[in-house]
Image 1 (cartoon, one colour):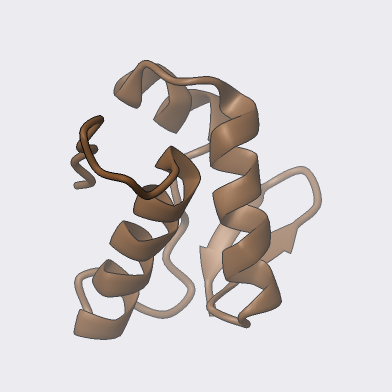
Image 2: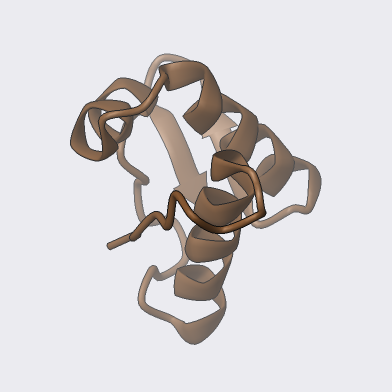
Length: 76
């Protein structure tokens, strides 16, 4: 799904944000599709959940995803 490059000069959250943005724009993630939970994606990528939350928050500000309280984040 998303690959991280620890040698990249960009912060990890930006790499995650850009990776998810690319998946949404190319259609790999369709509208109203549920994104992985913050904890699940953090465990999968072996990084801090706050990093995932920051990437999700920026995607939400851009209007690419929307949260549903108690259910998770979905593609807009």
